[in-house]
Every structure is written in structure tokens, then in C-alpha cells.
Image 1 (cartoon, rainbow, N blue to C red):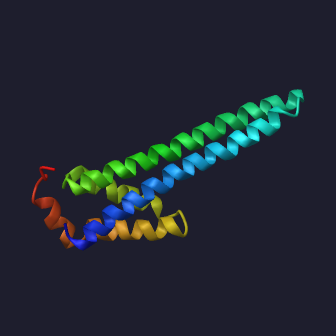
Image 2 (tube, one colour):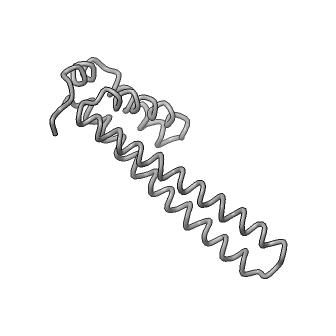
Length: 129
């Protein structure tokens, strides 16, 4: 595997695990807020508690799902799957606005998967791994 493709794959793995960890952090923060709001005993707090809990679960699940997609793309890159190259570039572009870490990872992913080394790597066909 060429070095640029290897770097792009590593960046996809790092981004994936960071997104999964972010999902866990969201879940912790919103669960803590849910407990504090629901413990106040006020009727108006119950609606806020339900909304806070639902938002937390939605954000945690969404972040973790994007992390899993990043990891799946990294596995596909290792196996020389053409769909993984396209998916990796899309995920790299989506990471660009996530300053500062996402921007750096996105640039490495895009440059690694769009270079001539990547063209040769993916044109060799799927690897039997």
C-alpha cells in the first residue's frame, strides 16, 4: 500500500474512533443533564428533560454512526474497493468544516485518495484479504 493511501486510511480510522468517542461523550453529557433536570421535580422540567434526552440520544447515535462509516471506509481502502475510495473522499470533504482536527484529517484523506498512488492502488483490483 502506498504511503499516501496508508496515511488516508489511518486518518479515516482516527476520525472514526474520534466520532465514536464523541458520541459517547454526547451520551454522557446529555444523560447527566437529563438526571439533573428530572431530579428538580418541576413539571416544566419534565418536557425539557425529555427533549434533552432525545437530543442527546440522536446526537450520540448520529456521531457513532458516522464513526462506523469511517471505519468501514478504511477497511474498504485496505481491500482496494473502488466504493471505499469514493466514500473516503466524500467523508474527507464532510470533515473539512470541522475545525481544526477535522480539517487536517480531511485534507490528508482527500489528498491520499485522489493522488496518482491511489489511482494505481485501486486500479489493481480488489485484494483478497
